[in-house]
Amino acid sequence: MALNYTLVANKETASSGEQVYLNVINEDTQIPEQLQEKLIMRIIRDNENTEFGKKMGFSDIQSIDDYRTKVPVHVYDDFAPYLERMRDGEKNVLTVYEFDHMNTTSGTVGNPKYVPMTVEQQYVYMKYNYMYLNGLKAHLLPEKWMEGKTFCTSEGTCKMLDSGITIGSASAKSAEILKNGENAQAQMMRAIYTSPIEAMVPEPGTDTKYLHVRFALAERNVSGIVSPFYNMLVHLLQYLADNHKMLINDIEKGTIDESVNMPDSVRESVLARIKPDPERAAELREAFKDGADEPFLKKIWPDLVYINGAGGDGLEVYDKKIKEKFSGNLVHNMYAGITASEGLWSVPAGIDTLDNILACGSAFMEFLPVEAGDDFSQLKLVNELEEGKIYELVITNFCGLYRYRMSDAVKVTGFINKTPLVQFMYRVNKTISVALEKTTEMAIEKTVNDTSKEMGFLLSDYVIYPNSDVNPGRYDFLIEPGEKDKVDKEELKNCIYKHLSKANPRYKYAVDHDQLAPPEVKILQPQTGLLYRDMMVFGGANPSQLKPVHIIANERQRKFFFGLAEE
Image 1: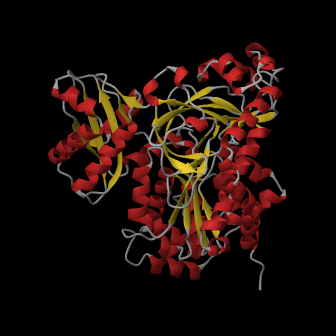
Image 2: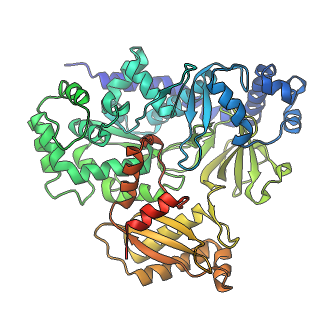
């Protein structure tokens, strides 16, 4: 019997993560205060001779209270001049820790932000974002997940600066290592993932959707799907549904359809590694004999066990679409912890739950009650949090960020031992306020989800425009229902107003007192959200970092979405 290299690799990753998982669950959660104190004092001592450490008097700091007294709360612009010098290769500016890469943030508005990926921060990601997750899978998922490959949708490329430092997403850096490395870890990842390196580190002009989906579809035994964001996964699964006949034909013949864009060198490289597989093609045609309108994931991959990725953070609409249109609720969800280019703050508490365990060994965390605004005297430590309350994260980590205001709001949902459980709620700086009503993105999401549920249509996507060009101002809702759903616009408008009034009483007050006009509604053409994403990728955006647009923030977005709204 041939050796199953995928099984060997998955067993190895599960074994390496098992002890990390048990330590976090059983030990770390018992001592959150001690972990936090040990971490922050190490960062202070290590960095007291950096330029920033000298300026802040790190050498005189002997306690957490000293640190919070001497070092003010910061935003990105406070660190930007230091980070620009670090991009040029300067050392000991913000941090003493070595780095040769800077992560770019996933924001799509304004100038990009850069955060050093230090060796110490790499270890944090490895421990909590890789080893812990593999340990969790080993303990909580059926064992058959180890036998199958993983459909991984990550991709990206890095740019090398004159200083020798690369810039790009964290996933892009990992893919570069996977492409160039011949060490044991790189070989293990190649045995686990379905996507070819030409999709994960793409050349310009390569249709990565085709490569990701075609190679995954050709694989009979896929047990897991990993995607940075669920909207990206919806994008790929919709591509699969729309193009399954062409994809199956290519699998049968060992070809790449002429309509698929990619450089000749990439096409030649891929064709050299694929062979005709008429048997697999026959299996897939049987799976799709009734079309792609019904959930098909378990039909094409009977051993599919889990999907892992960010399903919160305003992405619940895509989570719901995956369950209703693709998985049929037959696949476990392992939602990602709260992580960003700036660091990692939590790990999933289990399977099929949005609860996260604060990873108190990953970063020093402070928590500002959202109602406190900019009153930093109200900042709380991990042992001072209250269940049911919402806090904004302020972090210090191994990247050279000190008391950095993340603008991420989390809600404490409970405790595991002495450590809080949290759920991501919304971005504090992502609110609509035409007449001082301050509607959060979370309130918008609840409104459109409750509306689609009450009216009985599948919500594919949505965009909101805070329209201050009319008097009084109003919210313009651009709704993309399922392709087969017909929606009455007047009923939709009334339903949206009802649910938004519940989600934000300030909004109702503003409308009742003529400070705002009632909402306007337009229907988006099918797959508008996916088309916008394709446009951004074509323009050079990293697909693995593209979050969906739910609040229109600039004129380009306004013109695009309103241009595809049906009158």
